[in-house]
Picture 1 (cartoon, rainbow, N blue to C red):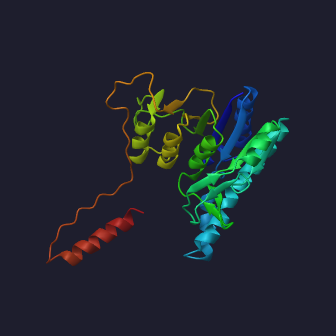
Picture 2: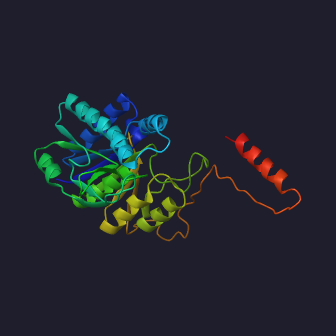
Picture 3: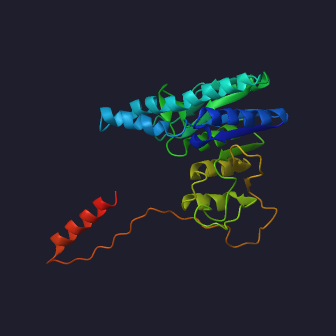
Length: 288
């Protein structure tokens, strides 16, 4: 019997129909004879909506209260996904971050995981249940709910895989793997079958949005085989490991870039400085 961790982001669980498809993916892994842990994000843009509501009340809301608010998004997803699995006649149980034993630093909005007590998860796995865990969140030693910041659900999944000594952690997303560059912009971009931790870390730090650098670092430190694959398609993805078995002679593995970057060059002109500054700010306003 193997043990796998699956992570599904917000776009993969953005609707009830997608949640049902995610349940199918979890069951498919379970039917292979694996123990299955699923980590999920909040549905679609629900986190953005929660932030907007908070900002309607306060321009500078408390970070502690924001953690209390934003952690509810994942709680909705885990309960709905567990229900979807139950409806297909399989056993599942949902856990928030603190129920899953995830202890973090006492830092609101950008905490790091310090430890994971896997007792509750292990007990559920031993009962034959699929375990659903809320990503992006944990609890501090003082009992305060915390969130992990950008890429928090990826980090949760990899950290759980390390703590549970999983055979693999699959990041299930809206692309079928890691490409040589962004296929939305370059039509002949090629999917890579394998990349190393260091290569993926470099790509992630330079703008490739498929994985967060913190998650890749965690996987590298604990030697967790990491897979990037499509959420709702049966297709082999990209494996991220320490050693390469093929294509290991290439100097350049991929190209990462960022768009929507504005470059501003400022020239000092004492006589016209006020006119230039006014023109600059008017131009900036027109872009948004």
